[in-house]
Image (cartoon, rainbow, N blue to C red; front, side, top):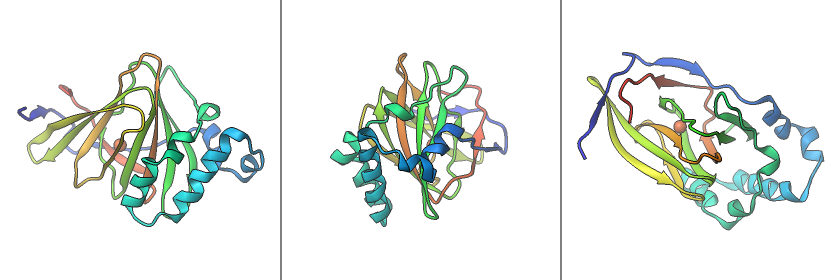
Length: 193
Ligand SMILES: [Fe+2]
């Protein structure tokens, strides 16, 4: 399939990534004191996460049965305005973020600064479009359908991407950013696929 040329703001634009306040409560000490059956698996996942040393380790953990056993119901926040980002855990090395995608919602085309991103769709159905940035513009490279528990990873060497929710009923994905990502560059496209 030929590359698709995308018109974009010449130098992109920096944007801060905002996190849901409700999500941060989960990462707080107080929140951890209130353990429920459903969150024990998430605690186990975070425990295993702390033992990971490489991006490949994170990828394997996201593919594991442990990940499949985590119930995120209590942490889901959907908004009609925009997809929401929920911080589940962070330390000096990485951050774990849950993203809830409502009907018709998608990300902008964006990079990942100096971070590696490993992501997995945990419910619903997502599509990832990957783009390459060149001096003459942004070129569509490939697309990937992400059903539940399909793990993918991206960094700036792989390219830029956008994530699109394909489910009317909403989709949920889990993202590991290492190191933590506080801002990225997004590109406003005219003919984005
Ligand atoms: Fe991304």
